[in-house]
Length: 611
Ligand code: C2E
Ligand code: CA
Ligand code: CA
Image (tube, rainbow, N blue to C red; front, top):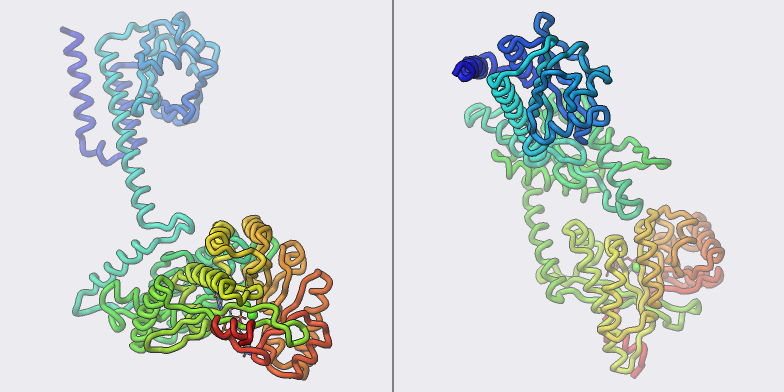
């Protein structure tokens, strides 16, 4: 009866402590301190200490200790399972370790050998603190004088251990909530806020001002130019470095009025800029951002220069809700990009109209790809004599219902940005295979046909399988196909790319580098990849043989190709002078309006088999 009453007294003291205002406001450490002190005073023990287990569960680290008369001590102490095997096993088995004589109890005997015994402890009362099912720590009561622990003592220390376990799980819950909050509002790659956080913030800014006194702000949509080319050409890790460096720079920029920076897409950032009343400072801010980004970025050994395009919309002038503001700054950004990159563009109504048109056009292009709304023309490629037709290049065309024939220069950028380019390339390949099969049936066998592939398509590891499947379906030999890729697509050193290329070559397909001379591929790269042809870009052929620089470049490309054992095609040959010069220099193949313009498959067949 006495025991019960004592325990009841302890328990009431514990309730009073926990329900007190002061206790609720304390952090975890403060709570542990208060509980230890209460325990020490009520039970009259010399020391109360709280310990936590490390992740492996093989050691205990002291969080704090309360000494009666001596106050708190938080110097670190450590107990290991190695030294105190029996003690650890007992705790793990959820045992309350109630020991009258530390030196003789098997569970605590080893304490006298280890320095962490606190010195001169006669009796111990330790209760495990559980963290779910796992041992999370221990609360330990030590008496200098030998003491027999009462049932009330044991019940009370168990109650304290449970309280601590509750405090721990509450803290874990708070932390995970914080983390969740962080995850839902941050971009985990750069640590910047994400699009959701940006939207929330814009909404708050709009609501703050109310309808009567809206406080203007600017939304800047910042898009890195040609990040795709960097990813494809130099490898994803380089692209990632670029993104995280730009994120760090934007975050670090000190601009008066800068409110927040967010990452809103793979290569897109947004910045909120307040008080843009003075247009001058706004311009300066935009210039500063463009400059910051243009500053070369070091990745490993290389220095990379990138640029960005920025679109800007103003609240409340260009939109008074979040969605409109974002849409408008984004379309202004596209406008900036289209007018030559590394530019900033303020939103205006014309942009709104063209954004709508663009959106419409993207949809129509997707439909054209899906429903055979595209077509392919073939441009013959001639031998060095300019007479023998030895090949043809497939060139895609889109006949738009109201805009008429569109050139690839007009709609390929659209296809790239809308993510349609891979599907487009696949469609062209398919059509070419079909034309090859059909021509053979009509006894007008085509020479090898060269198909242009985007960097996206050539970087796709599933390409060889898809090509193989097509060759089978249309009964086409690999030798009948050539693939052209632009120089930039092969800039990076990627194992995947090499494998893809080698698989294609194994099928008998020849590979050429298109628009050679406009990119920066190293000789070494060229040598190490299985290409067999170079196509000299039209821009170098244009002014032959008058322009000495172009002559020099073309000659050096021809020399280079010879050295590497590659064949050379000159594209864009339009007149006799160009032809004569190229023939004299030993250029292997000639292509251009001088011979034939791109033509339909029917016309090509007529050429091959004159009636
Ligand atoms: P490209 O691969 O350099 O193709 C040659 C381009 O030069 C073609 O323009 C062709 O019509 C044009 N051309 C040929 N000879 C002459 C000439 O003597 N003088 C002049 N001024 N031009 C000549 P096109 O058909 O407009 O194609 C433009 C570019 O679009 C191509 O350049 C190629 O990079 C891309 N392209 C075309 N079809 C496809 C395709 O199916 N897939 C992909 N990914 N890209 C394609
Ligand atoms: Ca080409
Ligand atoms: Ca070309």
